[in-house]
Length: 265
Image (cartoon, rainbow, N blue to C red):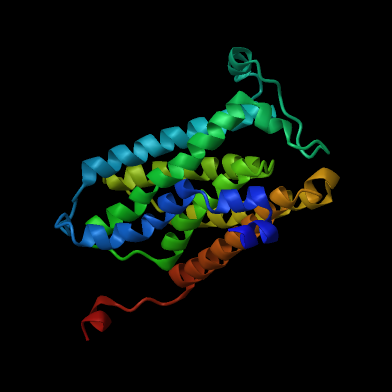
């Protein structure tokens, strides 16, 4: 413990070794084997349909609210969120200022959205649960993505990384679209949106990389071991997810899939 504190700093070590994040994320790795032994797997068509529809509708609604609330904090709301700022006493936050810790963490709305967003990443473990319960394979992309997302958000909150707004705004918007799409397909109204959603996910990572980089040039941010650790962790995590998404996108759209006759052989 002392060696880790010496290498990373007291606050970083405390965040990395927090029982909450360790138990929360490593329990995800037990989800697949436990569900496989549960006797609840149902491979029949339409299995868990109603539960999946409800889940996706609720996640789409939450994601939409998170996006609108984040937009209110940043002043992108065109006035619709003024009532919320009046209720909380918050003011519009100006980003990329040499002011640490960032004023976003003084915003009641931002802090509430950030923590709810963090806990929503555990709820999203159900994305994997549905696949396992329906007898479908779980890709390494999904496993890595769901394991790492809580870490990225948690470290940004605990280490006061202002760049968290990028994750909140971009990811909540994409998830509003994505979960709406899943709700429609689960209800039996499929439409060809998977290609577009994957492109949107890839785009959010690339744009996120671009808009988070300037924090390196903010003196108080660069001088903070805690914030720079969160910044570097985000690049490592999101960079890996981006590479996996690009690999998935290429295989899903450009690699010829074997026909049913070839599979039988």
